[in-house]
Length: 245
Image 1 (cartoon, rainbow, N blue to C red):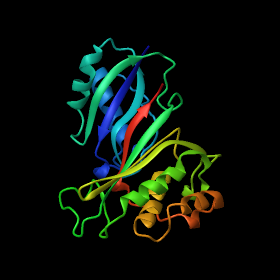
Image 2: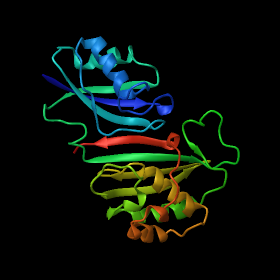
Image 3: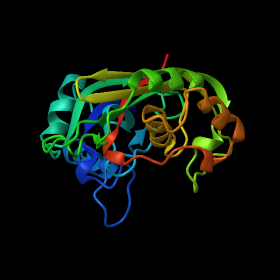
């Protein structure tokens, strides 16, 4: 049995999220369908994590097992020929049978994009969040540093999450501007449901002066969701990279 690792890029706009679900377009089911068409085998495609409806990925990782002796370099081309253009298989490689996209993952990096120009963008409206007031990205970056380390991120956890523990480790956190866009990047060993989008909403509060950068530390300590900012929309969020070593 061969264990195949895929690196996947997708535009989440037209999809109901990663996970298979009845009566909704989903990325997992779409790729599984393509794999069956190419290999003749039904597979269970395992992702590094489930992304919600509207969330994008540049470096999602998933794996599946097949018997077919198909050259590994041909798999991306074969699958892409069967997939909608909003999903692209960027790379395929054969990995150890013990590799598991979710359980062997060490780090994930997410990015959130905010356009803070007055009018926003018609072209990129589904690929970023528009906030029509100028943000102070330097203060936001200062605030982001308080997120680094191991903390109980209960204040940044959406209700309904199934995680038993809300303790996570953030290895790096940064905010930078490029012209009219502000980019929030977070790398951690795992993220709670809507955690990145809530952090982004809280950093926006810093960016408009509603709270101070050092207030992030207090918000973490309260473990109270009501103390953090609002959950920003899905279209600004990207799963950027998944690391296994």
